[in-house]
Image (cartoon, rainbow, N blue to C red):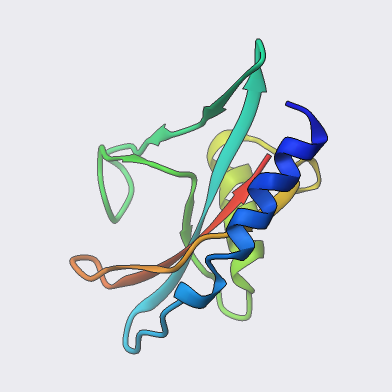
Length: 116
């Protein structure tokens, strides 16, 4: 993908900043929405959670998880991505952030970061 197309994605993500919500009482978590290009097409990478994790067993998901004490949410998304699928944080370019979503069944407020 041309650099200008990634910049278009970045600008559109910036436009979502007004849609962010603040929710109380939920644990903080973050995910990476990993995009990549192959053969001139853009793809979205998803994972399937194992049966060994505490939350969301067997679900299709973005790489990510609960924030550690004192960790900012971008660090969480990048750390969890590395732990789950082996992509080093320094190889991820963050394009922006999507609005938070609440997963009340498990008690999380999730912040999604889009990266390539």
